[in-house]
Image (cartoon, rainbow, N blue to C red; front, side, top):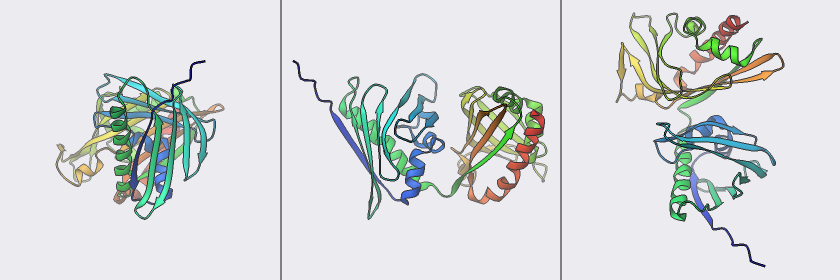
Length: 292
């Protein structure tokens, strides 16, 4: 009987200078995973699902930003000890173990995974290490921006709500909670540029140039901020204006009986938190009225 060949196990690690609760939350929450789960700037995770429990499934859609290639990184958990360890089996049968240890310098994360046969061990190690290093940078830099969560239940289907909220006339009505002259130009198609703008109190045009990171009709929409518009001009190289760069605004729609739960999760600089805490609930009530 031929002995089954043992798989090569590769290990990568990093130390994250952040509280353990933050490290665990940012590592496992899908809304955070899509921020850091890429090995290089020309790749992204556009969508993520995570049922974090033994037997639970996970999926991250990893793809080149230019849309030239992509794949689903998916599998099922075999063991989860909150704050301590995670073990899972990928859909291709390979096993992965992740350990979180508290050290004097922060949280030491160690990932051990069985190598696949298509790429060299060195290339695989470099890729997994780059993603882990990207997580460290994200977790250590988290704080100046906060992720705010808003939700509302609407008496309509996810498909209808998704369609209505993106229509030009309806969009201007429900987003008037942020600016009375709110409007957009561009396309809602995945990968396309879209600009949101309005007239401020001084009569000047302000807004944001964005990119549609993901668009799954009736289910999920992700908008990535690229550049701020100040006085009618796109601004680059300005520290304050660039503070919005990379921020995401994500919409998730889930059917609940005959109704739909619409959730909005958005990255907001801390200085703007009071404004959005007041404006977002008003905007969602306006959208609810339009949809019902």
